[in-house]
Length: 158
Image (cartoon, rainbow, N blue to C red):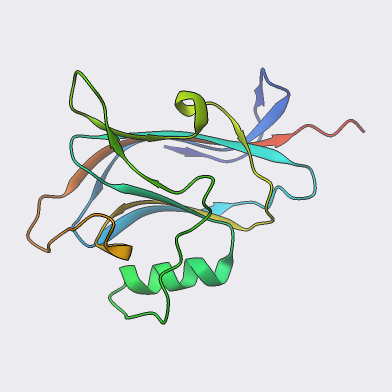
């Protein structure tokens, strides 16, 4: 379920993107949220938790040309470069102790983290061999993940 629009959050902001859903990602592919508005005028934050039973990567792009190269790779092309995405938000999922689930989150277990760069922004749950950070073969199992993503715009004081 994707919700875009108004909604206030206790921390003093408006939720402009909200996703809470199970996603299936085939090998060599990614689940993407492409319609994340620019927050640079008002300021804002992102918070996410993504969980799955197998390893995956999360990429957050705040540079359109970097995202286009990533998307070209996912589409089967061979881009000139493989940019890592925004270093503050992009990461490989880490296996949790106890239940063996893999998880990727914003800082402090999925709490809000300020977005300092200009948009547009792109968020991807990756199940490919992009940047060779996780080796995924075309006959591997599909990734079954739960995505909890929120993008919050700071409230205007006007």
